Amino acid sequence: MATIKIKFIPSTGVDTKYTEQETKITFFYFMEEVIAGLRVIGKIRTAETYAATLNSFKRFRNNIDLPLDHFDSQVVLAYEAYLKSCGISLNSSSFYMRNLRAMYNRAVETGCTQQRFPFKHVYTGVDKTLKRALSLRMLKKIKEFDSNGNLSLDFARDIFMFSFYTRGMSFIDIAYLRKKDLNADVLTYRRRKTGQQLYIKWEKCMQDIVDKYSDPDSPYLLSVIDPESDVPHRRQYLYGSHNVNRSLKIIGRKLGIKAPLTMYVSRHSWASIAKSKNIPLSVISEGMGHESENTTRIYLATLDTDTIDKANSLILKLI
Image (cartoon, rainbow, N blue to C red; front, side):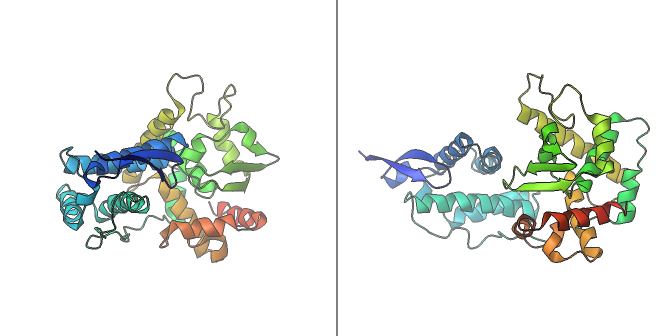
């Protein structure tokens, strides 16, 4: 009978049991253990990303698990073909492949299997997609969009503009903004995705939106999350994100925008417009249209706050 050992999986902080016998270590099991470990240490978004990838891979496998040592290039190639047959885009397929590769590499690092380079024949890059950045003219159209009294479209338009005003703040960060984060005309928040703390000079256009949607009895700056609700806050955020992006797509179609209008477009647009106004790449790192978002994080993390505030004020005057 195989001996049970305890192995520490890097980046999870959780000890995971597995057997030395190769055939006892299955791919589903390994991924589920890592996902559980990520949830324990609070990396919920990463856990959800891996869970979505695992669910997709399970559908491909008809929920039939396989030993880690049977996870080879033939399996990966077949999975890629399956994704293509389902109409999954090249970038989405690459997204799943990169997540599976990360899991496989963890298994190799922890001694659960040998490195067989199963991903060497599949695409794991990032293909350039339809341009997401909007022109100033189109941003002004969004700002002035008349919803004819549709409150959902009103809210989506305003949250999109709030994101643009705040240098492309993501919806999850907007949802969790608290009133205490705004002090002496400076908004301070920590990005949930990266942990970076950012400072934004408060402008009138931001306050106008807060005045429209802020609940005086809520600790949150905007009414995305209801602290009195029995629904978990994260579920409220996910529901709100879905509704806002759905409404934005309606607005985009009405305005004749070719690419789907989503919250991410505001972040992309801020960076693109900043570049077009000769704001140094050291300030905006070519926004969201560059090769790697990591580059953007590096640039934004090391910038002088006054430089960013001046850049943002310059952009907001154009709207």
